[in-house]
Length: 154
DNA sequence: ATCTAACAAGTGG
DNA sequence: CCACTTGTTAGAT
Image (cartoon, rainbow, N blue to C red):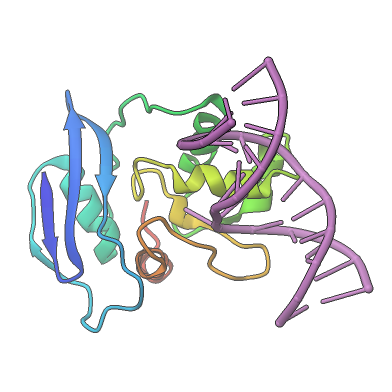
């Protein structure tokens, strides 16, 4: 499944009705056009992604069992529990799993999240108020956070 | 089985 | 602003 947008093509893979991977085009800088969806898919996964990017409420479809180390699975699980419109720092996540000094390792795991948007790694920010990073480029992270802040959905 | 460089961070000078 | 610490991972030895 894929979604055409003004920022490029988003590719979503599912198996047996469960989301397996979500790939966003990498954006190095801020795009010169506003974000808009050009071609919307109708399956639950696509609708969820589009809703997240446009500030609409949507139900998260079931996720597949993810491939990753025990540490990564642990981190992803904690991230998945962060409510919309809310953020947490890398350091806080590190504390949540009992490794208070592993903030850098947490960031490492975030970058390897195969399901960005589904597992809301965009809600993980730096402790000093900075955005941190994002695997597909910070503009995506910014867009997602702005949508959630202006529209408190679930 | 070890070693090392690379990271989306944090803290302190 | 710079440099030192930090935990985990992937790739090399």
